[in-house]
Length: 541
Image (tube, rainbow, N blue to C red; front, side):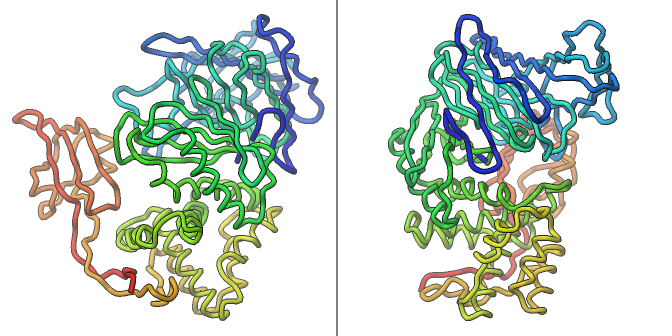
């Protein structure tokens, strides 16, 4: 999912980056549209010390019927679609907006074939410190903004495979701001006009960042990469570049693919000192957020994970509806490879490699996370294919087959069809039980090779002690278990939750809750440990 300033990414995408003749005019001389629906976006940030508003205007040709459905940008929180945009309005006389068929859409009524101009605003929609998962909201700050196509771009109803030509006018950004997007990077205020021609999916998954970023251009395996970094860290920008070169290079070596005329990485700090990080892959790009005092070298598996998404799933087939159903493969198998590739490249220690696997093995029985489930399924599947074929095949064959067959829909059915080629009937049954019913498959003792053995160890399961999802909805503690560690620590139904720090699926990470009780505000701390069970764990001989 990713790109460089005057070119773009391979085969299916054609990027046209057009320079403006006059920076003062704030106009772009875009190449006339050819094949594909034309959309033009204009971005104008209005900055103050306390608040920035990003004004966005969209222009497109209306249909001959006089009615078009437009879809609102949205981000996801607690499993619910959230629309952060405000002040949606039409700038055309005789054009009206009304509610659409879903909460995430509007109907535009207009004269047949009219040019539609819609305007809306994006603002920071939270209070308090910036931390995970707020990076999935439109991040609009006085010093910078970062949005993606999904959470920032209003658009007419489009299928991901629909051909489009999209123009982006950033001419009215502050003169001191750098611009870094999936379609180009610029530190020059005169080079702020970008165009993309291709499938809508690439725009919906595109990344857009601008502000006080430091822009660095370097190469990975002789292909250009851009680092857009902001904030102060315990490591230097040069250190970050070195780690990116090693990690991205390791992933590209695995795929035997370095055809990237352009690739962008953005790196920004959370408002915390330690312990939090997150990444996400986009068109010709990925972003990373980290706590400001944490070392970059501790995030190499995560960097490899995001780089791996360039193939899984971006180059594995045509997206269909219900993509969450394949997250066990999309996210879980990517977690497996992100960890395994950097280990075999010597970028992390054997102890760190095993720690990541053992942690997910302990979490597996009580977690529904596709990252955890898929990680362990991939580990088991890789080991069993190698074992049953005397090392002739491995999980790698499945990954390469899926990329070769990218013309097919990327669905569970297709993934299972490819995996079936390498599994015996009894292993096929185990795979389905693991994916569909959450069973832990039987991992062979020699799954990780010589010098590492597997044993059954006692470990506490994760048990938060109350109904977390219901509590988030009501804002009040709900469903406290009378015999759990949360109850023993003083948590009770009906207490109003003020602050929370919860590491899901991690029984050895302390839960810290600030609640409003009858006697006033109080802090409750405990370890979310449930019953002790036997779990497989790897050890170094």
